[in-house]
Amino acid sequence: MILTGASAIVTGGAVRIGREIGRHLAQVGVNVCVHYGSSQTEADSAVAEFEALGVRATSVSANFAEPVTAANQVVEHATRELGPISILINSAAIFESGTLSDTDEQSWDRHMNINLKAPFFVTQAFQQQLNGQSGAVVNIVDWRGEKPVPGQVAYTISKAGLIAQTKLLAQELGPQIRVNGIAPGAILPAPGESELDFQQKASLNPLQTTGSPSQIAEATLYLLLSEFVTGEILHVTGGQQLS
Image (tube, rainbow, N blue to C red):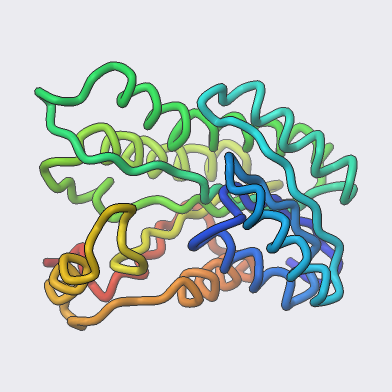
């Protein structure tokens, strides 16, 4: 895949890992549509930063709690502003702790809508606008979707579903579209997590250290450029899934 001059959608692209992926894409000449939920200030900043790198950039707000409507809104905006989109990064997600007994229907629905249904319907709209041309999808998943950890029921199930979706759609959409996933490890503290707790968690992986958003972005570029790779989940975890 030739990246220079291509156009991408990055969901959740205003902050955290999504922002870093968008930055790396812009640095190699990819035009970027930044999707965001409520982080308008950060999205405006991302667009300005990416444009300063010499590419076209735009942003669109869409509420993935209504995944079908939001998915169509994002893809329609991106194609209107940037033309055909050949790269999709599904990075938007929420994380809430919860056990079986204290997970209510609202929390369950939030996780399924944002973490699972939205990537599905954005990918559907992405495929439709390709009109038979080639493209690539990278889903940001989670190693806990393959090796569940108690205490994050709805989140873990939603990410397990996204891993299955990644592998299934890789089969269904090939050879036109390649679909892969990245499972990050200890990259950034979760919202509300203390730095001490984050560092203690990171010490449990075999490398006994944390990663960085730039390492996830570099892995994303690898998957976009690797034309014989599809249906894979690339773990960037320091080996945490082995512990």
